[in-house]
Every structure is written in C-alpha cells, then in structure tokens.
Length: 167
Length: 366
Ligand code: SF4
Ligand code: SF4
Image 1 (cartoon, rainbow over the protein chains, first blue to last red):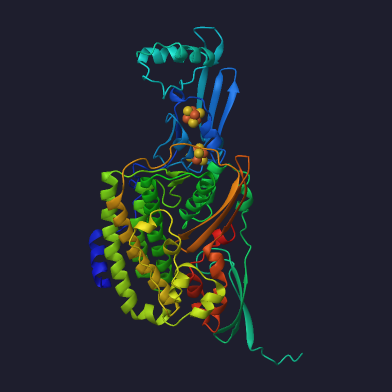
Image 2: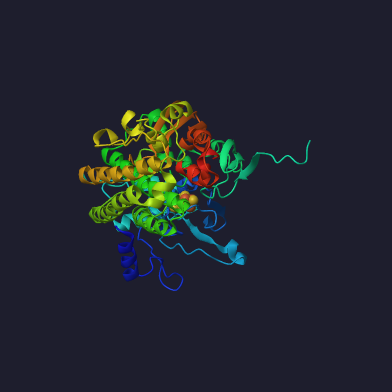
C-alpha cells in the first residue's frame, strides 16, 4: 500500500493505541492473569505446589487445617498449576491489573484454607478436601459424594471399596 | 611520543547498551575516519545462570523456565526441551498435539520476524513506517494473547503435547488475523523492493559472503540470506513439518536487505503453513494427559527457532531434576559473522548491521 493510503486510512481510523487508563484495555477471555483458588474443590494433592516453577504456591499445615497461599508477585503466570490441577480448583482469571502501592506488597496473596473436619465414621480429625473420585465407576451420586467427603482418607477408601456397584 | 601526531585510527565503544535492541553487548570498534577497521565483541554483561537453574528445577518446572530464556523464541525453547524429554521417555505426542505445536511455532515466527524487520526500518530512520510495521505485528500479538493468554511467553508446550486447544471460533479468528497480516506483509515486501530510503541504506551493506557464512557457521535467516540453503524444519523435520508444504527461502547477496527479505518471505510461508495446519487439524487429544517420570537417559534434539537452529542436550537421572541441560542457541553462532559484516562498514550503519542478525542477548547469555 502506498504510504499516503496508509496515512489516509489511519486518519480515518484514529489512534491505534488503547485509551487505558481512561478507557478499557484489550483483555481477551483466555488471558492468563491473577490466580484464583477454590478451597471447596481442592483435593489437597499439592501437585500445583510441585509444578509451580516460581515456588509461588505454599501449602502449610495449621491447627485449623491446610492453608494455601499463592504470592501474586512471585507468580510468573505460566499456568502450570491450572494445567496440572486435577479439579480446576486453581485457575488463572483474566484479571491482569495487579498494580499496587509498595506498602501492600505483602498482601498480594491469594489465600485459602482447607479446613479440618471430624470423620463421621471413625471420629479422626482429617482435612475436608474434595475426594479424589474422578475415576470412580459408576460416577458418585451427590449423596454418595457428600458421604465420602465427610470421611477421613482411610474411611473414604473403605467406603469406596464397599460401595455396592450395580452389575 | 610526538604530541603533534594525530592518530589515524580511533577506538569507539558501541554498547553495551542501545546497539540495536536494548540489549547489553559491547563492541570495541576501531575506525578510520568513517570506516570500521576492526571490531572486538565482548559479551557477558547479563549472565543469568539459567543452565544451572534448570538442574534445580523438575522437568515440568523447566518447561516454563526454558520458555523464559528468550521472549521472541519463547516457543522454540520449551518445545525442543520437551522433545528431548519425550525422546528419553519414549513419549508419543498425539497427532493433534503435533499440529498444534506447529501452529504455535509458526505464529511466533511471524511476530518475531515482523519485529526484527520493523526495527530495521526504525534504524534506517523511517520512523513512520516503523510505527506502521509495529502495528501490523500487533495484529499478531493480539492473536497470541487471545489464543494463548500471553503476548510473549505463550505457554503452549508441555511434555507430551500442548497445553492449549483450538475450537471453530478461535480457528476462524486466527484465519481472519492471518489474512490481515498477509495483505500487510505483501505491501511491506513491495515497499522494501521499491522504497529509495530503505534500498539505499540496506542494499550492499553488511555483506556476509557465502564462504564467510560457512566459516562462521551461521544459522537461520542470516545463513539463508548468504545462500546457505538450510532449514531444520526441512533437514530434520519435527512436529508436523514433514507433512507441510514448506518453502525454504534463500538469497545470495548476504546483505542487510537480503536478510530482511528472507524474513519477510518466511512470514508469508509461515502463514501458508498455518493455514494448512488449521485445515488439516486432526481430532483427538492434544497431549498425553499424564505427568510421567522421565527415566535416566540423554538426548539431543533441535528445531528451527525464528533466529535459526536451536539445539538441546538433556541428560536425566533418577531424580525429578535433570542432571544437565545444555543448549546451543542460534544467535551465539551468528555473533561472529558481525566481524565480517562490520569490516569496512560505515559507522552510521553499525546499529543496522547488528540488528540484521536479529541478535538475542537473552539466549546468548542466558
Ligand atoms: S489446587 Fe489442584 S493441584 Fe493444587 S492441591 Fe488442590 S487439587 Fe491439587
Ligand atoms: S501460574 Fe505458574 S507461577 Fe503462577 S502459581 Fe501457577 S504455576 Fe506458579
């Protein structure tokens, strides 16, 4: 294209730059941004912690259960955690606006808690994680799922073993 | 020593900042008048120790770490690393994954080449056209961001396949973006063939003869512009390249203009390859959906990054971390050729000639 044509076209189109911060910025749906953690669906397998190349994710045992912390300023937004997470409990939102004043830097953390519970069967204290039942055949009904979830790992295994599987 | 003697040769420092890209490389250049008579290249300003770091990370973390070696070849590094791991573990990447790897690779090539040629126009001094070319590249960058979620570190690769998938909507979107880039690139090629300012500054400048290209062992577009008809995608096909109508472009003049022209022609070829990939995209899984341990072993793999051949050596042991990862990056091979290109060049052309090898400090000094 002759440069004059480009010039005319650009005059008509106006500036190509985005108006941000005065207007919205281009943000595609798939943008890999801020990490979000959902303790309710987490299996506590800690795969995300292992595959995170930046060591941004830390799980820790506390008297209340297991805490999850993801430091946004350490995270490199690679998406490894989401990719290898078996339940999508951790995922990247398309929120990219993580600017903050220096004083807030230690608050730039995604925090979660997988609470302790008392096993309904044996009374042991165990984590209320989502049960690993993705491969159970046939799939668990909602009631069965709740029953498994209310148990400790040992009783969960026993429950699943003794589950009546219709032939 | 006589105080009246005016030395005929001056030494001028070029760099370590602001040579072509804002990357640290130091040239000590001896000039006679306006003409370069001798150059010394000095690297090592930004060593990051990534090779060492890889031995402290697990194989799965390293896919991400290798991606961060270079932002413009950021797909080729994890891909070649993953290929090495797959070779050791005997992992077969599913068909769809193979095609999607090619798609990611070629998209990155398009934007990388556009970036380099745009910078050349900037160094020629044709700022308006530079802005225009960067805007064309922005179509590609938006495409990367929309498909992969990031403009540079696209995170497409994983050991055993790819991490992303395409649906009809995204395929239609990519096709639309490619059409736009293709039209614009054809115009850019026309401009490069006819525009007086560009031709005067780049034709016959920074020549690397075929013999010198062989001596230096240059790779990628630098080699192809000097008549070395070599492209890893054809010589040792990986991903889906053995099934694609790949055209390797080579020119014989070996000057700055030829190197830019090879890159521009390669953009059009990449767009063709992308279209074929999207048309022939097979169904099925995109990866092995597993995270197997990589057994002890060693492997060498290579691929054609936008800047040329990148080679990976990987040795694993019983631990999750590799024992050694070593890579030979394209720019490392191309630096030496600057000694020949800059010989007898004009001082004003130095930045342009340095840019013409598409230098990448971040991979040279990792
Ligand atoms: S977030 Fe996902 S990967 Fe991490 S511990 Fe929970 S279930 Fe496992
Ligand atoms: S996106 Fe990457 S760096 Fe960030 S928490 Fe997940 S694995 Fe770690």
